[in-house]
Length: 196
Image 1 (cartoon, rainbow, N blue to C red):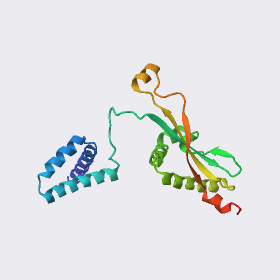
Image 2 (image 1 turned 90 degrees about the horizontal axis):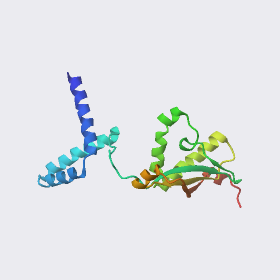
Image 3 (image 1 turned 90 degrees about the vertical axis):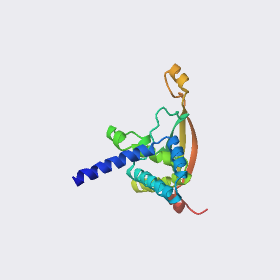
Image 4 (image 1 turned 30 degrees about the vertical axis):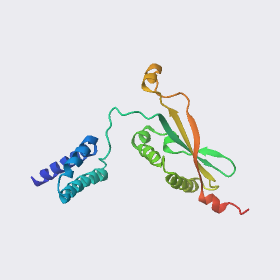
């Protein structure tokens, strides 16, 4: 009986955590208004309880926001990550989102890469750290010579507004654009570069 009760409490906690993380802004406003009329310590304890639920939702991976009928982004983007060698040779690295993949890899493993790229989008230091990892990976798996730099190219395609997309039968412009977003020097190349 105790085991069933604990499982039920666990399920209810998770359900409440998901609902709490997806609450509309009006709930926050109403809650703040109600808590303002309570004694300070009682309001603190209630807020702390809600913080604990939010913390649990984050740790359990239940803090995703569900947004139906949201506005679309104005463009679709992706990275093309390349290694450039001292002799001028440039190669697109065989990474999950830019190389041929099996159906199994694409369906069950590559979703992490999209999240990695999203996290790096506004973080030049994170791109730099990942580039240095790629430098080490290339040396371990390919051997010398080490790449001179890792180049991040940002590619994007603009999305049509909904009426235009309906009229054209596609949501993306046919042409894509690109720009070099960041170039990271490989420390291994710097060590091996002859002094000038």
